Image (cartoon, rainbow, N blue to C red; front, top):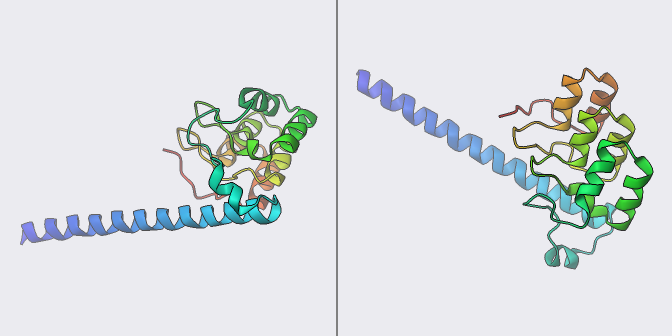
Length: 163
C-alpha cells in the first residue's frame, strides 16, 4: 500500500511538471506571436525581413552599439536613446551579459520616463535577467509606485517569480 502511494505521488509530480512545461510553451508561443504582430504591424517590419535577421538576441551585445545604448538607458539620456531607436528600432531588444535590457536598467535606476519610452518602443515588459528578475521586480524593490503603475499599464506580469 505504501509503495503504491509513493508511485501515485511521483506520477502526480510528473503530470504537474509536464503541465508546467506545456503552459510555459504556450506562454512562449503567445509571446512570439505578439512580438511578430508588433514587428509587422506597429513597427512596419516586412515579414520577409524577419527571416533574414536575428530579431530577438540570444547572446549579449548582438547588434550595433549595444553598450552605448544600455549606457544611455542607465543614464536616462532620453534624446540619445530616442535617436538610437530611430536608427535601429530593434535595439530595444538587446541586453548585456547579465541579460539586463535597457528597460531593466531604466527600472533599476528609477527612470520612469525612460521606462515609458522603451515600452512605447515595444520593449519586452516581462523580459527576465539571469536571476529571473523583470523590470517590475526592480520597480517594486525600489518602492517606485509610479514605475510599478507604468509597467502594469503595459501588461507586466506581477506573478513572475525570480529564480
